[in-house]
Length: 66
Image 1 (cartoon, rainbow, N blue to C red):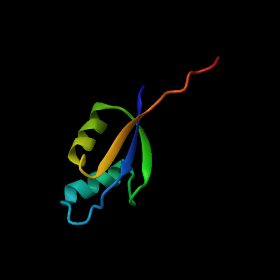
Image 2 (cartoon, rainbow, N blue to C red):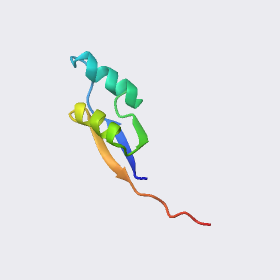
Image 3 (tube, one colour):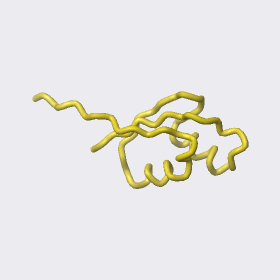
């Protein structure tokens, strides 16, 4: 499954409460903090709500060795 690296780029000051709670649910508390999550439709919906506050990039998957 693809992974996404989400970085908070703007402050949540003066944002509606729903956006502040979405950022908290994503695990972002501070500016320039990054988290990595699996790419799911639910996560995409959350990112759509706060797209003006975050930067999203896809994390390349390392080949698994057996």
